[in-house]
Amino acid sequence: MGRFLEYWKMAYFNIRMNKVRSFLTMLGIIIGISSVVGILSIGNGFSNYVSGSLNGMLGSNFALMSSGSVPIPTHVMDNLVDKYPYITGYTEDLSIDGTTLDRKKKEKQVMLSGGQPIKQTSVRAELIYGRFYDERDYEEALPVCIIDTYTSRQLFGKEDALGKIVKIDSHGREFSLKVIGIRKSDKQDDKPAKKENTGDEQEDNALIVVYQESALSIEVPTTVITEAFGLDRDSYYNYTVFVDEPAHITEMSNKGQRYVEAAMDKRGENAFYSFEVASLVGGISKVLGGITAFVMLVAALSLFVGGVGVMNIMLVSVTERTREIGIRKSLGARTSSIMWQFLIESGLISLTGGIIGMLLGYAFSGLVCLIIHLVDKAVNMTPDFNPILILGVALFSMAIGIVFGLYPAGKAAKMTPIDALRHR
Image (tube, rainbow, N blue to C red; front, top):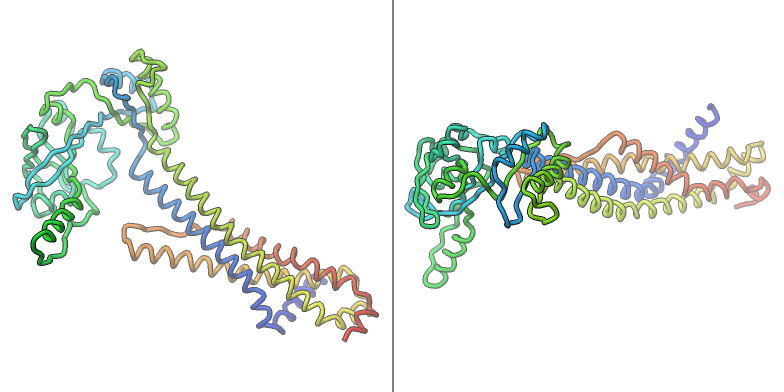
């Protein structure tokens, strides 16, 4: 143990004696390690952010739909819920477009989305005013609605519009809805820059503003839509089925589709299909992981360049210290001792470069995440930097020095004392 400690001291002394040269040798390792660590941390952090955001938006549910041939009766869905304990409920998905007038009597496009009260569990936007529609609202088809703060500002000029009436004109049907709940929205009001124009240019700009506007979102009990349009409230083409936890989504999605096919006597006809929206998270994560791995592989090529630099400088070091090697061997130093001396020196150079590169890589990834957050406040991404990565980088950087230092160390160890002392 004392011998190896002496080798470390000698290696440290030789590195300090040639600071500039040692730093330039480390530079390739520093660039390679910092690139790998930075890209890996940013890639994993972005993947975690995307997965977390999608999981937060989607929840534990899957879509069960008819291909268009026949609708699915609600009593079949009720039986499905009773059959499988993992399924906690369902809501029909029924949407219809229409128009309304804002406070300035300007026509606005709206999208009415129908559902049952359980739908509230799948909507992650916070309800900041009022309440969500309940079973009574649903069963009695009471004309109530939920809007978000953006829609509220657009229609009424303020966020808290509880009790206000929204008049809807949809496909020749007119009806009114009372606002009973308002959600928080991150969407900002559109404020096009004012500009004096005339003629065709003015018309073009008006068209651009119109096309930039998206339909305002309004949530209602499904029965409000069916009542307004005289639709059957006992069968629908699209459903969202809720599961107790994400781990059961795939299983229940497959079993739910097969159950409906059997109940409707449509086996093998592709009349129904299920879609696990949450499965997109895994697919997106795999794609992001593949991209990160590819970019990291490209960045890792600089590690090879850095390793060649270590080998080159160690060969120079062997040449410069030939007489020292000769003196040590003439005094009884073993071949293995000479080899270990140079291996430890090359390993120490690479390890030091790896540690510096690791710190720079982490600082770079943190800076990139900060810049992204400053550009878009909604994106709160943090680099994924774990202890396993730290240990792996340290060992890998040292391994580079040892591997690329083998040849110079072997060359030094094989010298005979006479040849080494004759070297000038």
